[in-house]
Image (cartoon, rainbow, N blue to C red):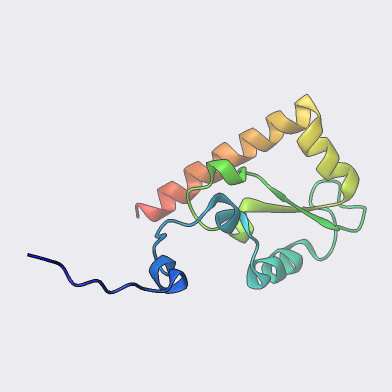
Length: 112
């Protein structure tokens, strides 16, 4: 028995194959999430409250995300505070603690 040969173009063959989103896609910040973050922060750094917020920091790293990024996963920070959060031992510990609390609350709310 011979099977009929029906070749498909590569673009059609690869379309809709991937079901799970990539790490980059999970960490991407949509325009609606960005707008929600800016409204929440009123354009000021959410850590120091003094400087103009110009950067968005993930509390949970992209590699650890299990859901699409929401405004609750982000902080609107000035450059100095973002550097502190990502590069100093105290900042990294603070970010991990905030992420742990946030993840606990999100899971608790989902189970209700």
